[in-house]
Length: 291
Image 1 (cartoon, one colour):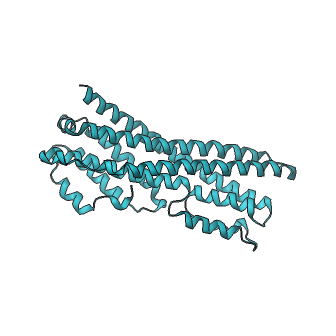
Image 2 (image 1 turned 180 degrees about the vertical axis):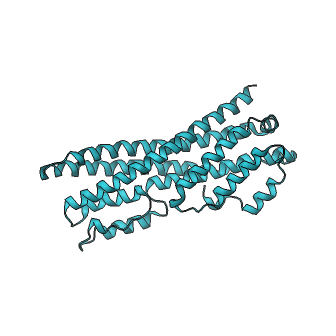
Image 3 (image 1 turned 90 degrees about the vertical axis):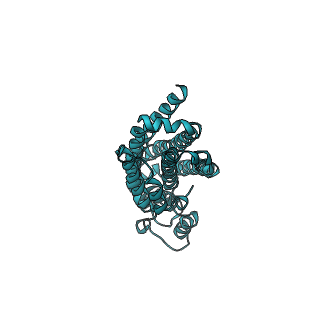
């Protein structure tokens, strides 16, 4: 699922006009949050803004589906909406796991770096850096698999033709499908951000290749690239392959790890909020099914 697959804003407004927005201001609220997320830049620098907007959207959806009229509409496409809710929970869980694994490995490496007192501990730090680098590859592989699964199931986000018989119902279901598409798109950007390849792997490897050229390249001259996660990946390569002193590489790596740790904390809080809300929405849908 990519941001380019989202419906154009003009088409979205045409559909939204069919919704009973006056009696139900929550529908208008959902529309506004959707428009804000669609209008926000795809650049990773906007990620925190997108996560905040997604929190507002999901919270509004949770309130929306508790309205009696909305519940009646949900009955027509309940199985499909339950499948969608499971997709959202799966990809949210993948992001949470990636952050948790990275955080644990980060703290282990930081602990060893902070305990160093003499040059004799350099070998221990080098060993831990290699272990951390390997753990990042494990995370990136898991994210790659999650993104592949996301792409494989993206066609299921399309609204079924059966709802066309119910004009108002179709409009409500379409709104919820739009929410799913935008949420999956945001999670995709988040996973790429954590992976350290928000744009393309070629850019990342190009930056790395510059670091390991025979010419002398200082870690302190490392140009900021991509997310905090990408910068840590580059700092790891700089430490292991640069011609500069290891002390300089350690200092740069420590700085980048601290930035990434702060970023992880922010993202974890946002994801935990979303995960709890998504669970509540799924439980509510299941209750409708069982009653």
